Image 1 (cartoon, rainbow, N blue to C red):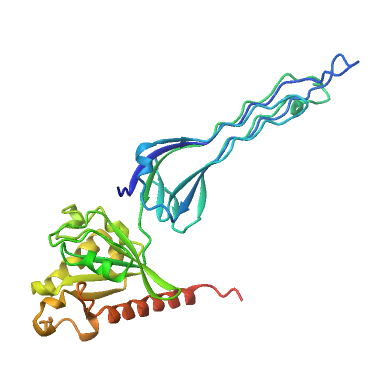
Image 2: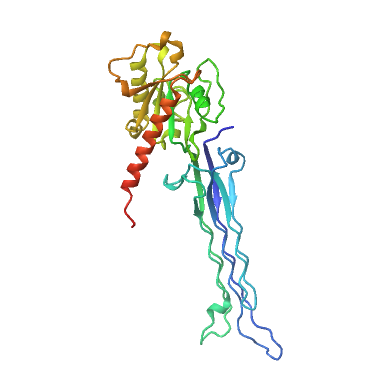
Length: 337
C-alpha cells in the first residue's frame, strides 16, 4: 500500500540523574564526594533510505522514544548514555512540526540524516559541587528532559521527469514502455490510483527517474478527482511531460486544462520546463493528425505507448533538456577553484 502522509510523536531520552556518593576507603571514615554524572539521553535521528518507497510503517506505529541516560555512580563513574534511535524514511520525505507548522527537515537525498529531537544532558554528580566551604555536598542534579515533537511526515517522490495528463491518456503505458516499472494498465479512466516511479535507461551509466501520477481532471486543484492529493509528487521534477491523447481531437483544450490545474496548485509548476507528448498516434490513420496552429513543430512529439513509435525522439529530447538544466545548475554554483 502506498502511503505518503503520516503523523507521529517522537521523544528523545531524558538525561540520567547525577549521583550522591562518598568515598569509602579503608582507614578513611569520611571520604570526599565521588558521585558521577548521569548519562545523556538518546537522540531521535531521521535518515533517508532509497530502499523505502512508502510511509506505510508509520500507520501502525505512532510513538517513538529513545532510551534515557543511566544514573551516575560512585567512584566518579558517569552513567551510560542512551542509545540514539534512527528512524528510516523514504528519500524525499518532508518533516514538519505539527504545532508550529515549521519545516524541520527535507530529506531529499539518499543517506541524508538529521537529528530531530536531542536527548537531555545528564545531571551533575555531587563531586561537581565540592568547594572550599562545602567539602561534603549532598546535592546532585536531575537529568534534563529530552526534546519532544509531534511530527507530520510528507513524502514527495524524487523524479527527474513527471507525467501529467487526463485520465486514460496513456501515462502508465508510456511509463511501462520506457522504464522498468510495471504499473497497472487498463482501457478505462483512473487505472492509476497511486503514483508510480520507474527508472529509464538512456545508455550505460546514464538514466533518469520518471513519475506517473493519477490522471488530472478539470477542477483537480480544488479537490476534484484523484489528482490534487498526488500533484505534490511532481513538485521536485526537473521536467514535466504533458501527455495528451491525440485521438480525442481536443489537444489545445486539454493542454489548457492541464496547465491551468498545475498553476492553481503551485504557480512554480506552470513555469517548470516541459514537453508536450501527443500519445496514441497509432490510432490516427497514416499518422497524419490534425495539430492546432498554436503548436509549432518543435513544441510537441508524436508518440505511441503501445507500439513505441517516437520513443527514441522523445528520449533524446528529454536527455537534452535534463543535460541543459544540469549545465545551468553547474554554472550557478560558486567556483571553488
